[in-house]
Length: 152
Image 1 (cartoon, rainbow, N blue to C red):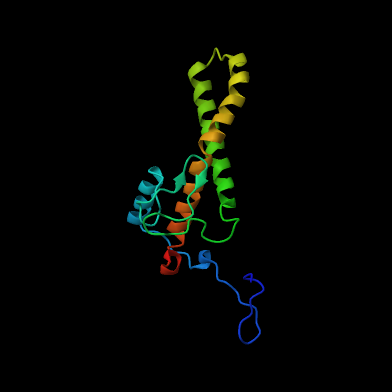
Image 2 (cartoon, rainbow, N blue to C red; image 1 turned 90 degrees about the vertical axis):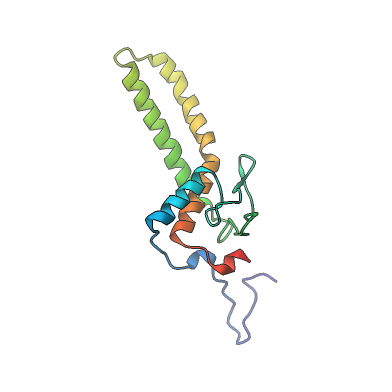
């Protein structure tokens, strides 16, 4: 029986509370630094031990150490990672393009730039795809602390 069709005893439909409906909490500097260290190592933002990624593009279902379910709400949980992905890859591309232009000015190799720009955009898009999911998960755990219910 699906979650939506299940009924409470008094006739009202059962509403499953999403784990991301927990109250927001402003992280302390220590907690933010710890989250950043786990992000750099691509580890679980809760326990900082289990790997988040399996392979290059896939995310584990749960942490192997603390059993945190990485997809904290519904099947669209990582939709926010798309925004993070665009920001990371776009900013990195723009910064590298600006650096290239500054270093090669005034004799900019425009032909090489015309060929290299799409290749650089493709490189940054592929390179930051898995990292964006870990960034999204880490930011979510930092702002919405993990509850004991999520570790079951």
